[in-house]
Length: 383
Image (cartoon, rainbow, N blue to C red; front, side, top):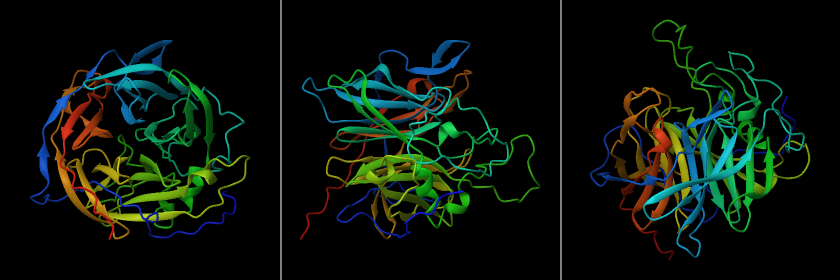
């Protein structure tokens, strides 16, 4: 059971915070022009899943965030591959991305030092799975910390509950960015999701049907909740949900950072906000990132696999949830781990500078990073 929480749900944004979000289904307005991408060179392979003691190549990059540039002009980043047990450092240059050392590893059993209390039950129809993958989906940066989250959902294929995917981690890198000087993990993001009224009934529910035992035609998809975006600004953490998609709305769940990482095993005690974005049918949030001026950029695409929903970037008026698209992302094609040629799944967005956004793609080797030219309107000057 979830312990009692001092929470309330409200459809608001943080005071004074303008957020940008990605528009989704339906035709884009004329101002949302397709953005041509330019490849960024990955200097060596990121670490992929470990099989038979061997580290494979990374084909499941699903999140990345970077701090501002150091004196040499490069930026320290943290990258997550959703088949791994942790995350990896990287250095982003003008035209290159260089993988570095491991940032942290959850191991093969939960640490007793994880704050909060793990979920007591789930509705994942495949039962419980091993503590062997973070199912990492998103990374955020707010000085001096990086934040990395698991999906907080059932596994997509086998529909299993894995405690290892229910963990949010905050890490502070050392002075030269080669190791973590401090790492703290928490279960309390789950508490926040359970306090978010519009989406709580979808927590730890199957994401999709059993691929090998589909129900009768016309049966609605389960639409279970999973987190794929993360941002921290103004002392609050924003979790962007890929699903559920409800009546054309995608959701942000916002909670104070300090409450998430408070010491001890107590349940979350905090003000939880749920923000509905008018994203469009079958659209969900695929990533969140903060622009240098403090606005939030949201990457959106399909709320589940196989839906014909484009990847778009938009500005959002909040708390109304109205989206104004600024770009539709041109697809990036490449080979999967099995050699099949596909359009990559855009899952990470990092601001590079004025009107340039770096995007990484799940299912393609090392995320196939590409820089997009995106015309983002300047922030309005307060009266």
